[in-house]
Length: 529
Image 1: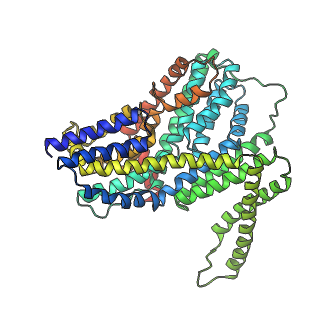
Image 2: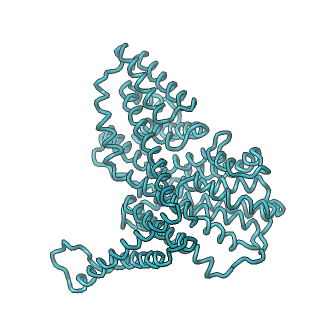
Image 3: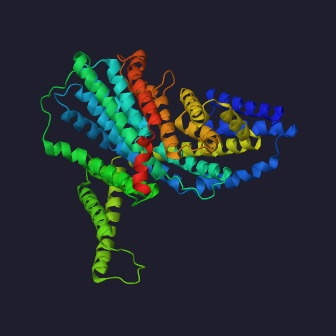
């Protein structure tokens, strides 16, 4: 590596991050700065334009024909439907009703809803905004400290980063899979065990739920020591607290979460297949929810309910019978089950059509599709820009610089890992998680994973770190989301002060997983090995 190559690599990094921080869209900042620097470097004989011929194949191989990434728009669709149809709103309101009389009960219920919304949407912005609009006025009305209320909502909203099925885990799993295979080839291992998104989902489950538990312990402690900051809720006149009413809003989304996450962890479905089930289930639940408020949809609601029953019946039939039409020997029982499954599939299809009709009548369908397309396009545009950036970075010899830098860090593999975690933490002050995953991971992951570091443990540590970045002032995105919907009496300083204890809790969780890797590696080893 000569000094000229080192100079251009540094210029590339400086130009890319400067463009991102200046406000240029990330996809164009990454690809544009890389192409400009590559053009200049070619005049000095440092870069060969023939490397650019690999861009089309990389884009098609990474984004267009990648089955894993197909799960991303489906999970986004699932989350947007639940948020726009106010299924999430019902969940939050009824969970708060169950917390009557419990010290800091409203704050604890916000965290519990954050867990459920994280497992059903994975979209931090939508979760923080929804809970900010619904919970923050109620918490302030009940006498909560503005800083504690704001911090609780921001922290609960970021759980979508670490609790599966999370979009960041899908992207991380895809990046780690390729990086791990490349790293193992470099050290001569040509048949390593693959790393899948399902592995990362299983690895993140215990740390994610444990982090939510730490949040609730902190809130309960505040409720005991400083009850004036988070008084217990009192029952209001006219509220319907019947158990059947509360369960009617709580059970459907919980069952959907169990179906999606359980099918992945049980090995019955890939993340992409489970995402399809989640999007379909969210659509049916939204149809039932919105039909109660939309005139002329009574019959359609009955058809949607029949579709939900048919979906459940198909799951049961799949578990007790062989539904393959191509099987050589089909028993009489399986023949009957296949006939019933075909009828149930037709009913399910009618239920989906009815749900789409209800969403259209409610004026929700168009907004839902546009929001899903907008978020998905943003993510994949950044992926394409990062692919171009990564290709030119490596063509300039940047991977050799990273390898030399990692090897020079004291402490060996763990020292290098700590350096990467510190880098990700600092970048989280300025960049979104998608940008960090696509810029940093292709560069550092192949180097880090050449050692004996477990890739699942590494991925969970990065995910926890990225979650912390959503809360760190002054540029934590969750803080901005809440500031946009918070009432005037909640000052920005209240939001910043409120998240500080939760940042400390997240750093404690990160340190715990770092010291005890089994927290991230035990469950995948039990489920998938």
